[in-house]
Length: 345
Length: 169
Length: 120
Image (cartoon, rainbow over all chains, first blue to last red; front, side, top):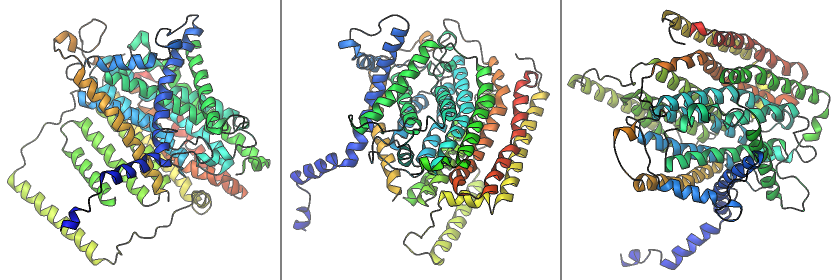
């Protein structure tokens, strides 16, 4: 009996085991890089990047005072938002809204688990990585719809509906545009897809697929020229109108997390992932390319006008779908001509 | 793990049925379907699990939510018919007992080993190959069925709409 | 074993939950609380609420949702085809395209229906 009591782990052993877990590779991957910290810092960085780039596009300067070059601006914003009152309209379902904001963040960050940041540097090397990402993406419309509805406000609901239809319309072309890559590599594993691009990046033979995917990604991210759900002159903030304070911060951060993750996905699928001359370590290549893609997306936001909703939906369902199918045909021809060996893993 | 998932599925399904607000019912359904996808993962059918999420939770639940939100004029509350009578309660209790008895009998009497059964993880390429060759006819028929479903669904909704006056914009 | 991937995903999501939830809780608790009807009204740029009459105009896009369900299922089969395509003998690969072509008809019908605003 007494010996049983003495079987409790001493404090030293507890600290040891905790230390072992913290320094284990898995934990580091999940929490630091390419996991949680990477996502959080990159998303915050992207908010700053967006404000700076758009400012320059619009011939002004952007954030300047918070730290050098305004780099601490996102932190200032975050702290400010935390302390603001969470104003929620009457009859709006506060718990639902906050739960959905949380869900948005969890969904937005989820695909990073399957995206490789180097040879073997991936949190979870899923054999179905590609369709995992698509499955996660398909969950966004319902969450956004719930937020729009739960806000109990016409503007929010309308924004939610528009976002729903926009995302739904462009998901199918997005899936089909990647079909070419799947045909060339014969795998859904993202690590393998990056490995297959050692000789030629997929952006070249799949230029059509790249264009379709990029456009569809812009629509999924609700960014100009597709940011109708957020059209500031029309719907205030669309479905996010009634989120305020901390809930807004979470939703806002979720949108930029999604931007980061989608850019990383584009890098992985089309731009060769981690491949590049080894003067720079491999993961850094991924990060650089990702931020390049994100930067292009931001510049596009500052440059293009908005697309009207019915044109937007119609284009997604007709032209983009046909372009994606055309890409499949091009890939069929490529394989038929015998060039498939270039990307054989 | 299996038990936890099944508990989640059943619990959220019950919640979906009992919820007063239709929206919560739809959310419960979504959670239940995600649980089913988890079961698929446990069985090694990851591909199916992903598309289960994409199709069911991503598309079907969205459809349900959309319909609830736009078609019902009121806020979506279900009016409670009556309080469950004692007869109803007794009947439910008996039904649950019977289900438990049958399930327990099956589990206990059937020759299932305690270890996880060996399952054959389907190689996706094999799946594609067999779909195109042995099951090609089934595939074409499937295409026709899907097409018919779509056309049918659209026709149904269209007729409902035509009955209502088109006074809105 | 691939099951490990899913546990890692679960742990990752847990990490995100653990870090995001306190933010929301903090905001909920820390924010000033005040209830008056003007503050609690939904945002309408100053006007008072009028009702929910105008939301039917999105119904005309209902066919898109149905097409989405259909094509979602089709995509599942299409991906298996894509995976196996390179190793398929000649004719079988193209039968799939028949499958997709069959679905062009409902797609066209759906697009047609969503264009006619008088029906919705």
